[in-house]
Length: 470
Ligand SMILES: Nc1ncnc2c1ncn2[C@@H]1O[C@H](COP(=O)(O)OP(=O)(O)OP(=O)(O)O)[C@@H](O)[C@H]1O
Ligand SMILES: [Mg+2]
Image 1: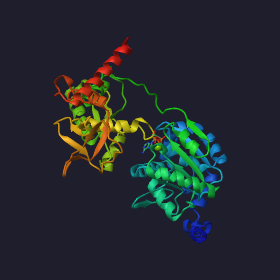
Image 2 (image 1 turned 45 degrees about the horizontal axis):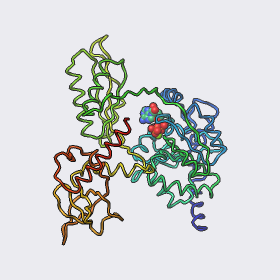
Image 3 (image 1 turned 60 degrees about the vertical axis):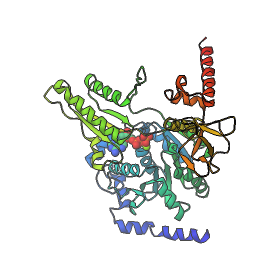
Image 4 (image 1 turned 90 degrees about the vertical axis):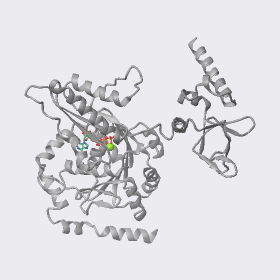
C-alpha cells in the first residue's frame, strides 16, 4: 500500500499548479478565475466572455426546484462529508447539483468533481447539456468518460461517467484521489456498479476526510442510504417542475395502444396548445403508434392543427433522437388551430423492486402467463402429471428447487431414461384460475386429480368472496 500511495502521489504531481498554468497560459483556469472575479460577465472556467445563450439558459435553470435550495445545499455540503439528496424527476439534480458543487467553498478551481450515471447515453447527453449550461466546450472543463471513450482533458473539472467507469478508476486509484467530490446519481436504480461503489466509498471516506460524497435519488428510499452512511443528512427538494393531474380510465382497456392513440387524438382536438408525451413499451409499438396518430390526424383535414409526431427509443440514431427538441409545427393557415408536437417513447419497464416481497411472486406470475399450458401437478402417488396431456414427469435432479412444490411450470422435457422437467419454478394453483381462466375452465376440463384440487381452490375462494360480501 505504501509504495502504491507513493506512486499515486507522484502521478498527481504531474498536474500540479505550475504545470497546469504553464500549459494553459494566462487565460487558463487560474487566469480565467481571476478575470471572472473581477468581471461577472467573464466565464471563470475559460476566461472568455459569456455568450448570450449562457444567460438564456441560466434564466431557465433558475426556475428549477433545486435552485430554491442552493444555499441550503451548499451549507449542508460544507458541514458534512456525505449527504443524500432526493428530488422529483426533472427537478435539476443531475444537471445542477454538480455545478453547485463546483461553486462550493473550499473547492479550488482545479478540484475535480465526478458524477456517476448508470447509463452511457445519460453520461454523454447530460455532460453535453452541462457544458452548454456552463458555456464551455465539451471535453474541456466538462467531460464524460464511458467505456472505450474518454472525452475529458487535464482541464476537466466536472466529469460525468458511468458507475462502471468510476469502479474501474478505483482499481488503479483506490482512494480516488483525483476527485474532491463524488456525486452518485440515480442511486435508487441500485445498479450493481453503484452498489459496489457504495461499499467502496464508505471505506474511502474514512481514509480521505477531504473527500465528499453526494448520493442522489429520485425516490424516498433514501432513508436506506441514510442508514448505510451513518445517518448522513437527507435533503428533500420539494416541488415538481409542472403540476400533474391524473386521470384514470373507468374500465380496464382491452387494447391499451388503441386507447392511447384515441386519447392523443382527443387531446389534440379539444385541449389548448402544448406538447403530448406518450409512453409505450417498445420500438415496434412506438413506430406503429406514430403511424396511426399521423393517419388519424391527417384524416381530420384542416379541422385540427397539424402534428409533428416524433418517435424516441434508444436504438434510434442520435440525430433522430434530437428531433424531440424541434418546435411544434405552425398552424396550417393564419388563425387556424395550433400545431402540436407529440413524442412517443419508451416506458422504462419497472417492476416491483428487489426488496419487495412481491418481487419474485410477480416474476413467477409473469412467467405463468406465458407458460400456463406447461403445468405439472404433484399427485398423491408422489409423481408429477402434466395438466395438458397427462404425462408422468419427474423433477430432474439438477433442477434449482430444494423442495417438491404442489404445482410447477416447466420449460421443456429433458428426455433421457425418464421424462424429466428441469427448468421449473413453483406456482400456486389459484394463479391458474386467475391468469388463464379460459384454459382452466373447470366446466370442460377432463377429470383428474389436478382438476379436483383446482375445484376445491375455486370453491374456497367463492366462499371467501361470499363471506366478504355479507
Ligand atoms: N439536454 C437537455 N436539453 C434541454 N433541457 C434539458 C436537457 N437536459 C435537462 N434539461 C432540463 O433540465 C431540467 C433538469 O434536468 P435534470 O436531468 O437535472 O433533472 P433530474 O432531477 O436529474 O431528473 P431525473 O430524476 O429524471 O434524473 C429538465 O427538467 C430539463 O428542463
Ligand atoms: Mg437525473
